[in-house]
Length: 441
Image 1: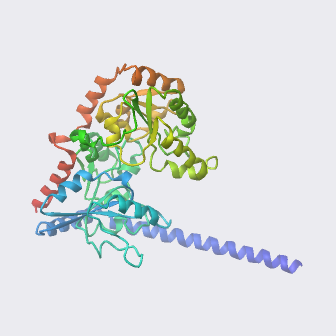
Image 2: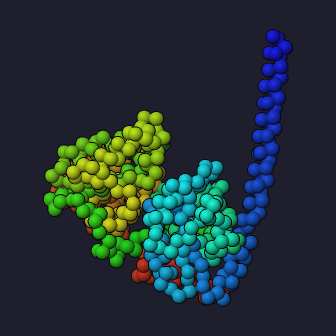
Image 3: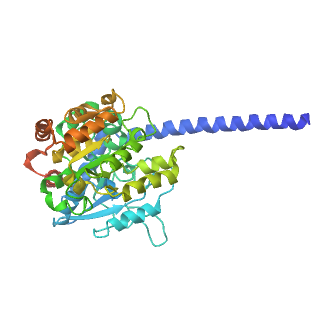
């Protein structure tokens, strides 16, 4: 018996030794990988690569452009895509890609839904007949690539695979309001971009301050997704088809960072209260529940919620007489609304374009510390709610009562900070920037 016990102890020690050895080797390999990548990301080398690509494009009759997108909710390139579609020199493709971050398996069901959403567009299918994912460098061979977001480190469609062959471009998903400067201005992703088209001149200033390359490739063009608000009235569609004339149209847009006490997300505090408001104001309000696209998945993973409870909650909003669930496009929703109640990040600025009352829900009094200088200025023109009574006050006095005391302040912020430069739509600014860079060589 003692021999068996001794053998088990020796065996355990050997396993621990092997694990420690593997860890040590992994650390050395990772450091070596980092060193190689840091060498690869030498700014002069990247600029030389990009100039070579521009030189090649200057003599091409057709420039192939790939717009990578993994969910319709994060499609911010409509205006740029349409401009290129109507331009004789560009051949734009929408390229739906699977959600495939880090080492997770790609979600092929969601990929199929995204492809169906873009069925009327010129779509490049990244799945071949055998079900394998295609390498875009060998198949489509794009000259320019627009990323919908910063991709994970281990995907087939990571910027690491493209920056040596294509001009890599980026428009942020929503206005950057977080003060996480490293994530939004200084990741390796940004070093490999040819151009990051910035929402405001304040964002360019932040890039110059926090980006290791001095933000030289950040260009102020305005935010293309907001161009729809200036061309607007035909986008109302059926976003509020079930609302009656007697109703004020309120959007409730909760964020998804529910797992962190330090985040602005207040859904877990007010999810039942908002249902009570819907029940108590049936004659006064029509409420659209517009959750962040990732909120449902977060609720699925939360022990106190799970899939059944989350689905049941979403279904309540979809089926009550004076409510609806909105999980896709929000432009028509914003245009047809009367007010917004939220703790979203990008909506802090985006909703201001319609110049209607907006109330930000403060989960904590110090939540403004979460926001960068642009975000704090946007918050200053919103009503503030610190508790349920404040929410009711916003609804009764501002939404229903019409006492919108911040209207002038909002209008000034939009005209001073949000409108795109050159009195030109942001999408046009982006295309003009690309065109002029190609023509210069």
